[in-house]
Length: 362
Image (tube, rainbow, N blue to C red):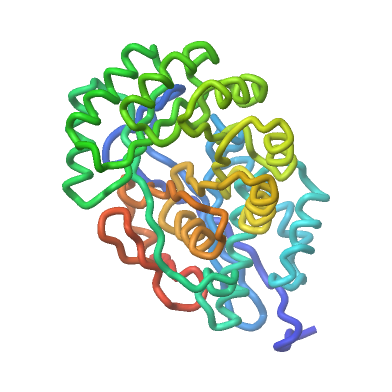
């Protein structure tokens, strides 16, 4: 049956692989990342309103790869064609009924559905989600290197107008401490610094280095220990004044509830590719708000499209207090662009319907 204003339906879902390279290799505790492959998802409706999403698998964190994204996506498509893309709860019930996990492909479909819904409403996504301020403030990330090189890189970002620096650590704590000392000396006292150990430290070492990081006025330590070690996170949280954040420890609404019940962290980093998209991210933010835990919104190397979805979410949700959506600054990408303007890490979203991303060739 043809769609009407009250009854829009999905006619097709298309999957296209695209590749992006980092401006410089990004070394983290578990890998050195040179490039990222991603899948752009296009949902076509009978009303002529199409939406775009992104499924960016990152096997180190989610266990997914492009093959699983496309294979699962094609199976989901069989059940989603004919449904109203604006009925996002129903879309997720269908996807979750077919597959557990597979966050990236669910996120890509979810983002495309929200793009359609907000385009149909004639609103930018952040306003469709209830926000009114298009401005957010993101950090930028520095990979692991020698202290002097990291200090030089940090100073370069500060000179470009960035005011928050996120530093990848997770190696031997004496060397990691030297890295932060060098960065703090280079950027001065007014620049905010947060660190991300990507599960690289032990509980004992985290407690030790946290004292040094506190003296260096570091804001936050993200995922210092293994994702499953909630008791360790809670012990660290009790032992330091530096904020402790969960990243790999939180993939789902159930993980968020466990972290809240254990009082294990001060902050939860939401990533759309981990949790399956905006619909679940809103739930995680609400769970954390109820527990008095602020959230950060992060990324795992998505292109401008995936990062823009996170930016709109950050602009709409009060409990998302910090933004770590910096892949747009460190990836070489020409295929997807637009949707925002920035001065350093201060972003203003475009006031166009939907997400606002321009996909080359479409």
